Length: 358
Image (cartoon, rainbow, N blue to C red):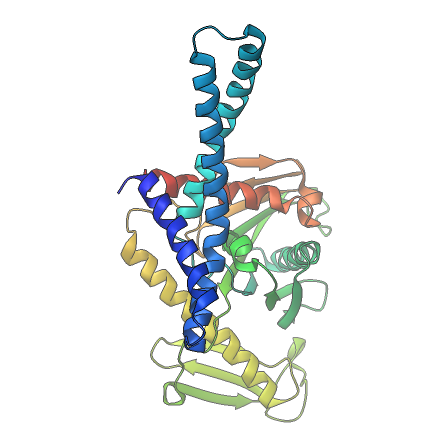
């Protein structure tokens, strides 16, 4: 099937769905919902196809006018100018249609669970992990997303050992999925009297939030342990066994939660994180099975891969996956310039996928 035939098929299907929804009063509610969803998903694709075809038709009409023997020279000159302008826009319109036709990640429209853990570097790594947490919170605020901390383990002096956050809103996972990996920082710690630059790191994991329909967790597959919650330095957060540790026996995934004083609330939060981790593991396994040769892709989500360096002395942020450096460290950490990195990563991923299908 040629690309033009495929585009015609999509437009026809969109019209067919429109007709069916307008006339089929006896359709089952679940089927109507399915048709409405498909119709909505095809809408932006059809709009782009129609715009592309409109430009192609205009270009052809202008080409015919220019090729006509005789005729007004001034009119032909204007037609030639318009023809050149339109033909410059057509490749971008074609690429936009091709991008819309790429297989979509079913998780792109999901909310996300963001996990940050301090890595090598001691207290400096914990402080950097705290910086990353604030960066993502500011980024979420700028996009109008809800940022809710599930749990956080702090060091007591401004740093964090680890944190888990639920981020909800439109397109959260599609934007944040490229953030998974090792983030490295190079800076002079406040406690460093000699002015030496230290290197430390923190690990970020972005998991698509899974619904119960995505992951079916059976009670028989869980081992739930309760214990007394403790805070920094070992002091008791409370005097009841409210902390929860849940082990998913088939996968060995373990989640602990103690931030809430209620055992019930801790269990609910732990299950939310557990479901996201299981869903993410399943997605990674499927991706590996489909694309063993795509280990270099920017969206691999490899937690052990060093993806980005934040260099304070030079005021730069470098993303190693696409060799992009921006000298806007402060603005990136404020969440303002993070989209420059995210958009570049998205464009690179789309380019790779287009190369595979072309």
